[in-house]
Image (cartoon, rainbow, N blue to C red):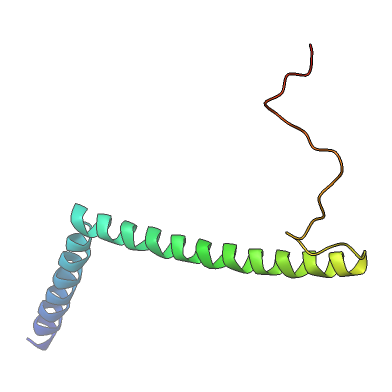
Length: 90
């Protein structure tokens, strides 16, 4: 009699566990999980890009200081000016 109750309880547990797993596979649940995963991936990519830009800017500043170049954005105007709207006589 006790063995039958144990098997009945085990069967009920397996049945409930199986139903929950099957309900998790419904299309709306799968779509929601995929969307959440994609949003998480996009957020991680943005953080990675921000870190890369910061590290690249720091390395560029180091190289400019090492080679005694002007900081980015502070270039001196050159003597030659190119006018793109003037025909060159060809």
